Length: 252
Image 1 (cartoon, rainbow, N blue to C red):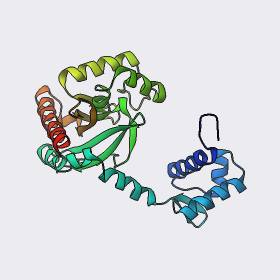
Image 2 (tube, rainbow, N blue to C red; image 1 turned 90 degrees about the vertical axis):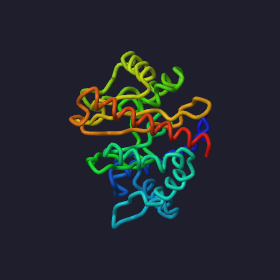
Image 3 (tube, rainbow, N blue to C red; image 1 turned 180 degrees about the vertical axis):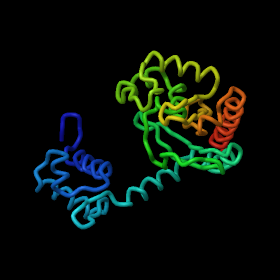
Image 4 (cartoon, rainbow, N blue to C red; image 1 turned 60 degrees about the vertical axis):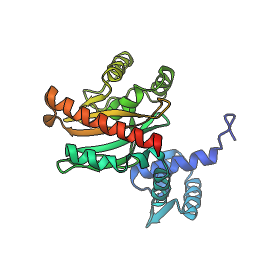
């Protein structure tokens, strides 16, 4: 055990799982090279993870098993905010015709925990469980705007301000100005800051103690939200849905 209380073998096991996931599968020798391990050590970890069912072997390659899906889905279904949003997100998708998501903050990152699609939604790189830097997306900025300043600072210190597109905010002072505007208008805007050509609008979901629990977001091709009137129309719809989720959360 290290001085900070971590158990090295446990940390290494999860580093291995992350590496397998990132590459889609690796042989023991490739994993050893990737993580600078002796091949025998890589084999020992992989054999142990395979025995637990968290890793599967396909010919010579090892990859994470679908057991992680089961664990994640159990956690997701038990979350109060997911239950509070489950009937509202399809309605917002039907109203806007666009891609709808519910995001939470976990360990300083944004996590998409529910998704829905309207009839005009385009296929974007989003799935339940995907993690992303909060500053790069509207739902993340909607959450950051409601967090205490010290917590926002800690998140930025931990994860930085990664650039995803030419529009991503990478200056801390500029981000704080954007968060202030977000609080004033009641919703966040992401103008191609993670996905070029996409505009996303998100509103926070607060609980009865005014603590942010999640955010609701609509994402659309930018050409569909290209003027103030259409932006305000979508923003009002998002805010209404976020408010419904908030009421459901408070009184469920």
